[in-house]
Structure formats: structure tokens, C-alpha cells
Length: 228
Ligand SMILES: [Zn+2]
Ligand SMILES: [Zn+2]
Image (spheres, rainbow, N blue to C red):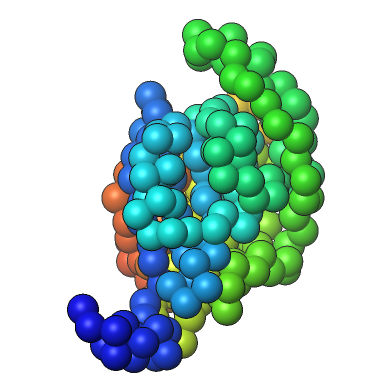
């Protein structure tokens, strides 16, 4: 592409860069979302694939502004320290999951995984916070139930489809399990109905595991939680 065309693309703020891939033994969906103009990016749930994350960061010349977590189950935080070490960025978590984060070694023992290297949380998230990356922002939506500190990240941009990174709260035609410590099935249903099905139903949902869906499809057809 010629320089003029490139300048044009930048001026009109081409689509956000967004890459999602399954990482680690539990195939947690890790995402990198970036502002194409400023190259600032957030990394969501680096449960593995540190090298792949580095390759994407290098190929797109990205600056990692934040490493954010939908919750602190081990498969979503396993390589946070390695990504932090390689790229910087402030490590963010909802305080409801602080006990789980602090017990990462216990979680690893439960799964039979090697204990992870840990790094401290630098920003504690609250419902309604916005995490800025360039001209864009990820809105923090607290959706307890799968874990007490589970959050979803909503990213909206003019002319683009809204994306909701739902962690293990909502899956395509399923929901997160609530039988682990801190889980609460009633709370999960309430979170999905009140905090997710009330948003833009055309929003694309990128769950913590498995294929994407939309809020509208789940509101209509999720066998576990239907819209009220
Ligand atoms: Zn989980
Ligand atoms: Zn998970």
C-alpha cells in the first residue's frame, strides 16, 4: 500500500485490530484488541501462548497498555506474568477474585499444573470503569456468579459491531459452571439477565471458551438463561 493510502486508512481510523485464539491446556480464548491509529492494545486473559502474543504485538507494532482478566481462574491468568515481563502493561482484575488470584498455586495443584509465576495486580477494576487504549475503551461490567469477581468487557466503536468479552459467564448456548468455590448459580443468572441481555443485542460475544455468539441469540435461545 502506498503512503497516501496508508495515511488515508489511518485518518479514517480503520477497524480495531482484534485477534482471538484458544490458549493453554483448557483452550481459554485469549484476545488482543488494539487501536489501529495509536497502536495501544489490551490483552485479555493470557492463559497461554505468550510467544503467539509476542508475535502479534511485534507484527502490528503494538504497545500493551493493560493486561486484563475476566476472572482469576488459572486457565485465564496462567501466563500473565510472562506477558507482563515481555510487554509491560498494567495488570487488572476485579477485587472479588483477589482470593482466587492469590491462590493460583493452589489452583495449579488442583489441576496438576506447575505452579505459575505470579505478578501483582496493579489496577483493581470496578463496575463501570473504562480501560482506555488509544481512542477506544473497554467498559467493565461486573457479572458475578461464575466467580465473585467475574467481569465482562464491552468494547464499542463508531461504525463497528460492539464486542463483549464474556469470560466464563456466558458461552454459546451455555453458561459458566457455578460449582467451584465462590460460584453462585442464582447470581450468574441474574448477572446475565440484568447486565448482559439488557445491552445491545447485536453485540458479538467472545466467550472465555468456544465459539462466538451474539447477545440476541443467547437471549432468545440459551437453554440455561433466557431473557426475562
Ligand atoms: Zn473460569
Ligand atoms: Zn475458563
